[in-house]
Amino acid sequence: MLETSFGLTFFLKTPEKPSNIRFIYLRITVDGIPKEKSTKRKWDIARWDQKAERAIGTKEDARAINMFLDTMISKINQIKLDMMCNDRTITSQRIMDSVLGKTADKAKVLEEFQLHNDEMLALVGKGEFALGTHN
Image (tube, rainbow, N blue to C red):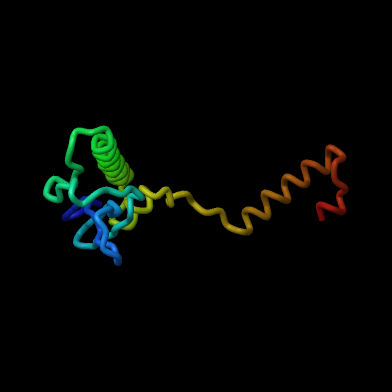
């Protein structure tokens, strides 16, 4: 399902204690619902262009930050494309979860117990465990 609006911004979040070095945050907005998360990168506010949402300068550190941000944009666009191809609803929470790697299906407890019991039964046949241990 397509979204009606999509926004992706990077910004420096103002800390509680005044400082020129701030964390770079990512904000994803889909259909007016924003989700934001820190990129775990810090940058000097004097060397940040908020309009371009990029680090200012040609030094190696500025180029590295800008390349990191471009990579994040590419990754988010790929996640969005995958969701569209798989007919999944596109939401800011789903995109953010995919970016953070929280999309793996969690195994259910009973399935884990069954897997463990099957492995134990296989070891009983090899003589490593007794049938009573399996039971």
